[in-house]
Length: 233
Length: 233
Image (cartoon, rainbow over all chains, first blue to last red; front, side):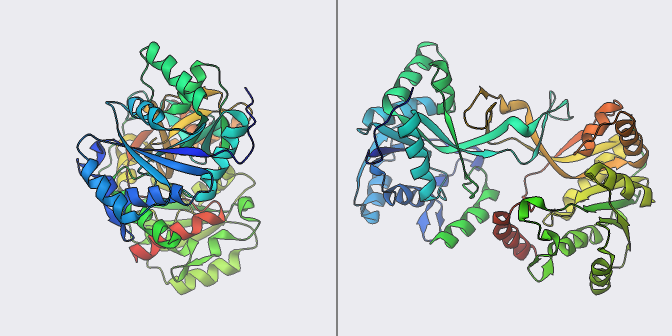
C-alpha cells in the first residue's frame, strides 16, 4: 500500500502517558523533574517543536486531568493539545488516542521517551506518509541469546537480521485504525502498534537512526536521560 | 559440569584489545582520552581493582607494544600485567590470551567496555567458579523485530525469552580451551565465547545485572561513556 500525500501533510502526535510505571515502584515517573521540567513536558515539547505536527493528544490516566491541565498551562504551547483518558492496556490507550486525533497521519510515542530527536520524528512521519506505516529502529549491536529457564543460555540467535524498534511509530490513521480493530476483533492484545499492522498485511518501514532515544523504565535509566536532556537544552 | 573451588580462587583477566575499530573510521578508539585516561586504561583499572583478579593479559595488535608499554608504565599497576599479540579474528585473540594466562579461571572482557562495574566482574567470576561458564547479561527490554531485507519488518519476535550478553564472560580455563579448540577443529569462527561452550555441551550461566556497561562501537557512544566514567571517578 503506497500512500503519497506530499510532505505538507500535517500529523497528530499521540503521546501515550497512561502506564502505571510498575517497574519504578508506583511513583509517577513521567512527573519526575529532570533538567528543569517533568519528563513528560520534555516529550511534549519535542512534538511541539516538530514542523510536521499540528496537534498533540496526550493519553493519560483517569484522575490526572488536573495535573496535566496545570502543566500544559505552564508550557504555554502554540499547537493544539488535547487530553484523553487511556484504557486498561496500551492498545486501548492508543485506540482512545486515535479517536481523539484529527490528522491523516498519527505519530504514536511513549511519554517516557523524552530525548527523541525532533528530526527523527520528522523522518518517521515522512516514511509513514510515503509507505503507510513506519517505525524508529536500530540494528541490533549486542549479542542475543535465548533462555528457556532465565538462568542458562539455551540458544544463540543470529543477530544479523534483528532490529530493536522504539517510538515514534507513525501511521496513516486509517491503516492503524483498521489494524487495531482487527486485533480487537481477534481478542489479541498487542503491546506494539506495528505488530497490529502485520494482521492486515500492511508492511512497516524501518527508519534507522543512531542517536540515543532511551525510555525511562527503571530508576537507573534516569542519570543518562538527565545527561541527554541537559545536552539538548 | 559443576566445579567447586571456593571463592579464594584467583582469576586471570583477558582483555581483548586487538580489534581494528572499523566502525570508527580506523581511528584507535581504545586510545581516545576520556575522563583523563585512554578508554583502555579505564578498562584495565577495573580489573586491577577487582579482588578476584591476580593478573591481566591484554591482547593487542602487532606493533602496538610500545604504546601499551608506555601506558602500563604510567598506570603503575600492582598486579601482574602481560601483553600478547592477537590473531586475525576475535576467537584467535582470545586463544592467544588463554595461552598467556595462568589462572584456573579466566575473565574475558572487551577492551572497549571501560565502564564495567567491579562488582559485576566479581559476580561473573564467582558464577564461573561454581558453574564452569558464566556471562554478564541483560533481559531484553526493547521490542525486537526480524527483517529479511533491512527495510521492512518481516516478523515480530517474542522478547520474553531474549537476553543480550556482554562481557565479562568468565570460564574455567579448561572449559573454554576445550570449547575453542572444538570450534577450531570444526573450522567455526565464533565472535562470542559462550557460543563455543554450546559445542561441547557446557551450560553457560546468565548473570543478570542492571547497571550500564556500554561498548564503544561508534563515535556517538562516546558522550555516554564519558558521562559514566566521570560519574565513577
